[in-house]
Image (tube, rainbow, N blue to C red):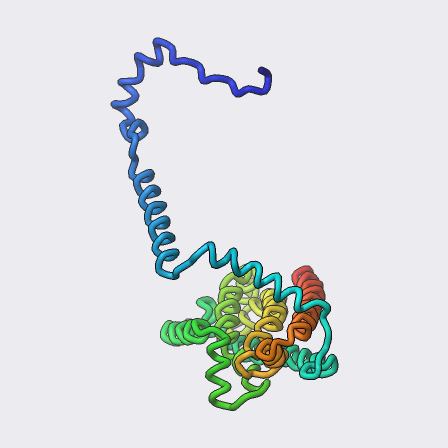
Length: 291
């Protein structure tokens, strides 16, 4: 058959005669179990064992999942058609969406403004003091290591319920992330521009101002736009714990079993996120092209 794979040609007598010499010269190549293969097999075995332990320990049961699919379809039928209710009028939901958008915008903007100088302090090519750089980096790690939902619970306990706690939660979480991203972008800045400023007689401040900042600003702005898009979704989640926005309305509708209002809110959130994604994507492409 023309499509069949060709069979491997048999070894010639000359090749058979050379096999003992090749085995003696390259024993590792002829070994059935090389260290690399043993390591790969051990990693795969450990991963399978961990998977099996997780399935057993977390009581994952496929029968429960299959039985729950029917209940899921039942909930979906209750959500049709999406419609406002007494507890969630269209005007009230739109106002809550606008509040969610404001939380994401203010939290992202404040985080970027605070993280920008910290990013310069944490970057190796803009800070000579190793102690200051180490402290700033560990501080950013601490802020980034706590999820925005946990920060929302903390700030709700500190300042009370409402959108102010949501803004603070987004801001606190994003300071750590922005500081990390900003410092990495600053460290990756083109060195030729910095060398040109120094060769022209510029000092350290001039090197940063004219050699680093113009090159990294489009990248930093693109990162801020991306996180604004991401925080529009995060603001919905943190609202469920009382940090304001549409999440609070959504949680209330789920508790009162107003499934038609739930589907309406979910659809409006999807439209909002898609619109932000479209606008921010175009802006990011323009900024990258300008940079």
